[in-house]
Image 1 (tube, rainbow, N blue to C red):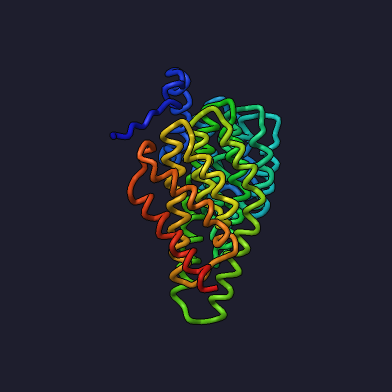
Image 2 (image 1 turned 90 degrees about the vertical axis):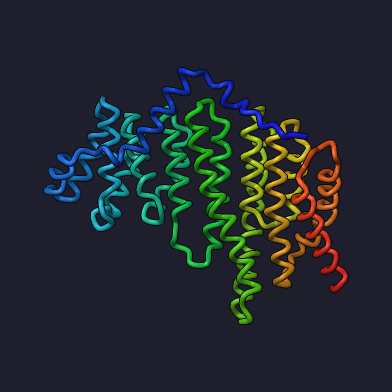
Amino acid sequence: MAKHIYFSFWARVPNWLLAHRMAVSVLTFVSPFIVSSTSYKTLAQTPSGQRVDQLIQSFSNEDLLEQLNSATTLGNLNDRDFSSEALEKLKQALVNPDWRVRSGSALVLAQKGGVLVKDALPTLVKTLQDQNWFVRSSAARAIGNIVAEDTGDPNGANTVIEAAKFSSYLVDALQDQDFSVRFSAATALVKLNTKSSFIVSRLISNLSNTNDPQTRLATAENLNTISTEVTPILPSIAKALQHSEPSVRGLALETIGSIDTNTNATLPYLIQGLQDPDWTVRNKAARAIVRIVTNIQEKARANFFTTSDLNAIDELQTIQTILQNPQNHFYNNEKASVSLAINALQAAQRNK
């Protein structure tokens, strides 16, 4: 039977609201290409500290394009000029009485991204509760860019933990009353999930690609740390599974499947997703499960299983039953992946 995907979320967005909010979103993305060269030349001759002050003050300009130009100019300052003093000024601007200043600061942090502005994350989380929709939307985008582009952790474990921590705030933002905030939160979550899933897979792959005992031990400890630290935030993310909007439930399932390696703790949420009334949600639950069982197969090749993996056999068998029901119309590769994972775990149990 053919599978139909219904974009019910977009269908319920009024055309005038969609056009307005998408226009603002597009402007924030294209503004780096339309900043006036005159403002760059003038600011280049201004001392660094004064330059930052002038740009932050210019966020209050009534013209939206000029606001975005100023934010882009400040975001384009090189790292030498973008000092800790500039970061402190931007953090202060996030609580400025003028919403335009608050949003401008968040947009600068979104553009800069990475470890350089990581200290602004706690303030940005608070900004997700701002009264203004544009400020909340800009804050969500900034959180995603900062955490996703953070390259300060060479082994990746802390990056995954950070992604899980801030994903919980972004999933809460998926329930925001404003479409633009939900859109920015969803975009940020995609960035975090992609990085987290990649790092966890890389760590597991490293186990089977090295014979050095110390390297294997360090990698195993990193994976255990990720699992231990990430699990407490699962209930926060799982709140979105109760949301009335299918797109929110689906993204929550993608997030759970991407950032957590504690198999036994994760699968009950995904089993719930497999039985969702909306096909798109069930499909995303199945994809998340495939990612998890693929990791289990990689662990089998590396001869590395956690207690959580071994305790997940019952949940995987439940998933197998759901997938194999012909009325659910799941794909054969999804069924096969789960079966291979079950076989690998059962073999590991026999060899204990």
